[in-house]
Length: 254
Image (cartoon, rainbow, N blue to C red; front, top):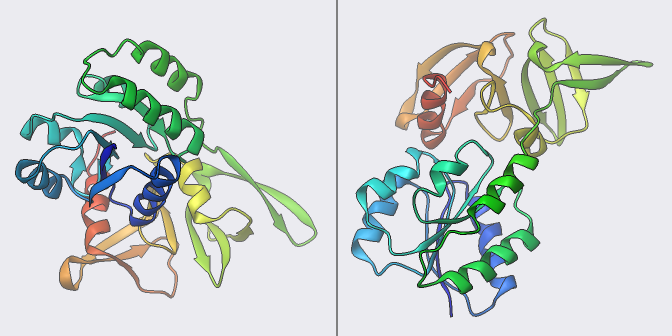
């Protein structure tokens, strides 16, 4: 039986990962599900370490590598992330594999098989192979969209886009010039396609460009209120957890 701890700040991703793990091996025991660095450090300080930790890298309160600075882990680690730039650092700690989102079941299954073979060993001889795989799959971010407008199609360069919105199960992009177009992609798909240096998902309804954020106001319970350019008529509130990530993103030099 393999014991597994999940560290993932996006609840839908954590639920999906849990389902995938138990489908791969129904004897897997999920020992915990955590969302922050702080909670992870506390849990690992108070509980027996599992055989495996499935860990996102970018969490609400920072990079999960901070956990390794506070706790001497006795577990193997599979890093699961949307970003490939942390691969080398991941293997400096207990990383046995590095999987890119969106997570594929067959790749997770291969990683679990590797973990079972590696438990009790310190050999990371497969690291070079993994890094080569990551390099081949280096993320190429979306640079343009072809949108329908009346009886024609219009190309829109990504740098011209202010924000994306979802309204009544329909999705739109708005340019910095105020043009508004319907698009086929969902916000979930766009999160994977857009460069995270330039765009941030502030809520279920909005993905915004850094250039579109005009003003940020403190709201109640740690939330933020965002004013965008071009302006729209809807009050945009950012949850407390997302507010922390948003401020880190805006303050980041990448």
